[in-house]
Image 1: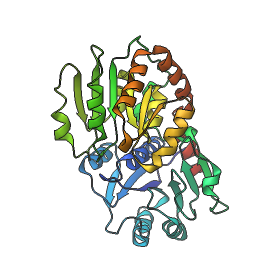
Image 2: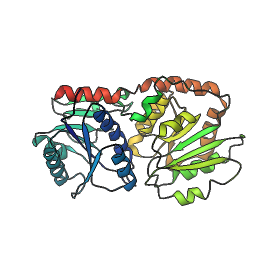
Image 3: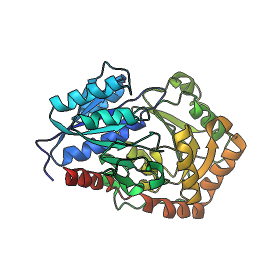
Image 4: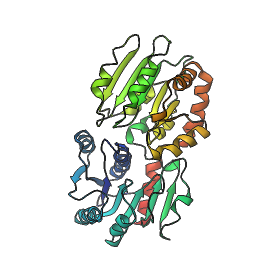
Length: 349
């Protein structure tokens, strides 16, 4: 594939309310597009200085819209930008991009890839619908154009370039797991991280080391920092992490939200406890638990410290369970998702 003459426009947003997941998974597609000679531009209706800095460091451009997100004006403005930059494909990722939004882009003569999670739109006009989740199925997209192509399931996971260096790597399984990674989204407005941290501090296992990833939109950093010096645990807070794959390789166990991070954890074979932080994560959490690929700790607002500690201590002390979980999750994601998606885009022209 040679896309040196082709630009890609990616329309996605990030904020404390919607988090950073839409942008970060789109970054994986942008990287894959670059790897075959193309150039990507992110078009955003929201502002996030840290995210924009990350995107620009990856060689992508960032443009801000003046229109209200998800409106017809947004779609018209985005279509105009795509035509001016000679982009053949537009990628949109977000739950505010409904039927009218898609139709305007298609009527402007552009190709459209829609990244979706739960079949939120009344009708789908996109050329390609990508749902990378374990629960994805055709029934979510009955109301679609006859020409719409479906890319469904974890074989299409948008895995960023940083993870690919770990392909073929074998994880060590100590008898007692002592390295815990906590990553609960780029915003975590409800401060679920604090509840998890307070629970972990009750574990009576020596030499535990905890690393907490705090996203750029997290408003609770100061409160978390006031807790991390509580002995005897070695706890560190990490901000603006550029390469989370290194931390996943370091860890023995993870505590995560049940969003796109699940697919990164699966690729890395990292045994995990997952919490449902938003409605769109519920199906992922349930299916991952059904597959034995993670422990579903339920909704964050129903967080039970005792139940959480029971599950976490079991993973920490039970090597066989960790091995079993890795065996179940690792086959879900092989890292070739972006290549498969690009192949379909190029085939459609």
